[in-house]
Length: 321
Image: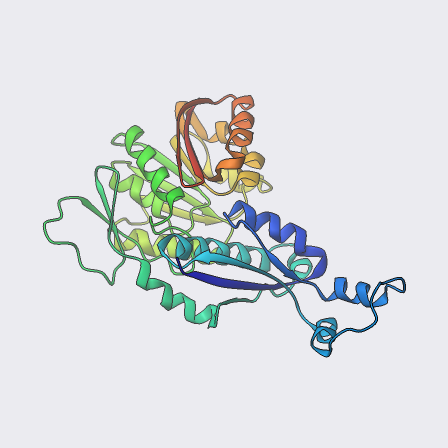
């Protein structure tokens, strides 16, 4: 298997926090270059060394970076879109200065070039029993009888190529009914809420903390013939924004939350307030190592596990009130 090398510039105090967030996006290991740590090494008067090569001395002036590797395939491309969305949200968040520039390079390819290069991996894909997911630049396969979900994710997570998205759509297909109302938390490209409407839902509301994702979701809804009378998207954080929670209201039949473990845990006490009685919750984006932790917290919040599905280290679950 070929691999892509991804390097993100950051600041020394943010390294641990950034690595923890990347772990929840499925990154398994890191190489860290830290100028402050190297300077501490140089200042160590008790160090058991007599000579340092000139090439190593240059590390005293290096950028602090986190480097990791993702498979050079459709899964890796989708993971990288998720990492790009994470970096964008951090750049625009309250602690932007703490994390630094978060400039990202992919091997010898710049982040800007990646926006087009990754398209080679995005091909039409059958999901569940009913949907065919495709980008606008790919033709419909001959003989297709499935409902077409056309999605152009830009830099937002959600093409259907990643297991977390597919698992979510497969579970949604089993519980959606005509006329349902759906809430998509952490909507990314909008694929889950748009897919829900194509599977029979009457309307959907979508939320993301990244403004670009919100714009992309609305554009993708329009590509699928879904207008703003049925699809509404909001930029914000439901955890800290009570006004946004009030705007979203309640009475939803289904919530889809394909995020990461820590955010799902932080949201756990809010989900029931959005759902009608006997409503359903689908959570995804969870690395398998943290699945029990997330499901235990949701159980304490009053949810009952209906079905749990795992694929290659990722977990999604369907729960009911």
